[in-house]
Length: 216
Image 1 (spheres, rainbow, N blue to C red):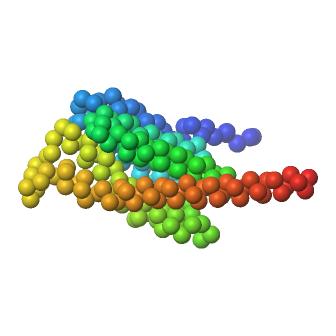
Image 2 (cartoon, rainbow, N blue to C red):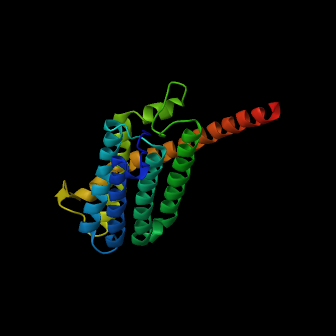
Image 3 (spheres, rainbow, N blue to C red):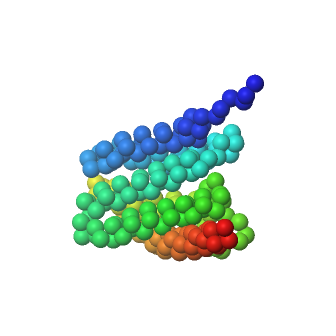
């Protein structure tokens, strides 16, 4: 009797990913008007990012589709938040545009290059990879960079509505923005490293494929 065919789309981590997308869309809808609902949905969508990874490892359901879904949800979530911030702070629109372009383009090409190399996820780094990427994708470093980056943009978002309770004569959300801004800037630089490493990797794949074609 043939083994039952697996349905990748119904894998538990991918179902969690669909939930993340629904929460993100609700957050996008309320972003211009209701920061409480938008914030709760955005945070829940981000928190579920950790659960889908654990589910993938626990149930042995890591897939390239899941990696793509996870990456696109992250990037689109940050992009839509930056679009909202561009409307809230039009003076800094160009900086938000640069942030979106660097974030999406560099992460996407890095993910694609990782899949071309046969990895199921861009987060799997080995000893032959770029040392910056190897350090960045350790669990602790990745968590803090991503958390601080999200806190930076989220604090800017909430600041449009309220500065929050005062702490040492400064609103708590403004304080969070100041503290996390350097980390967000460094993360943008690391995104550029993503793009550089990915370009080198894809060129290497091209070179190998061209050599095979010439031999044939």
